[in-house]
Image 1: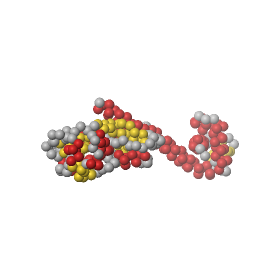
Image 2: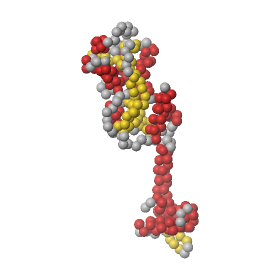
Image 3: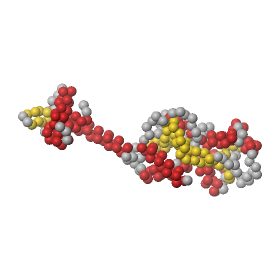
Image 4: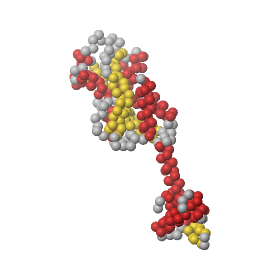
Length: 295
């Protein structure tokens, strides 16, 4: 049983005339007759009484008609869903982002996305870089946006933005010289292992000839805000995104230590073998437009 057979059956049943149905649907009369005959033969029932030149529904045909209409209506509804999804009029885009990105960098882009595509729901999860990569790999989300490089052959990864870390402390009395000895001797407040912020800082320290294992770490905390608050309370020094520390620097609750930390990239993540939706393409296009405007 095919949708085309059902469509032809309903057309004949409503008109009680094969020729009228064939004209209405722009198919040959023989095609209509063949479709009805195929349904009757397959199921061993007669759908129409054929009396002279006229036809009318049998009891089986009368019972079958509302079911056939229902199937065609559901098929049309299903087709409409696909058209709406393709036209960005319905759907959900699942995204995971690391903390700095989700809290500071991504929201203005999501606002622009919602204004342009109000019928698409964004389901945003927040996680560190390692867990975000796992979610993309497992198909829990379609897109990831993270702060650190991910080594996973099944994931495509590309730069979508950039940021830099700022070294901060609570005291306004800044050291005259920032050298390896001073960095080793400092009390550090760190993000948790797996954080892109921590990975970027540790990479920078290694370039300075400092093994991160040599640092004195007073606290390890699971969010940018908790690290910033602990530093404001005098727990030590730490490195956070310039986006995170900007309000505190302006308010004078922390002070930037004169140590240049390199610019880091934000990366998009997606599974290489999974289909990328039009909603994902639309979000990535807005991210690209945002980057061009920032230059």
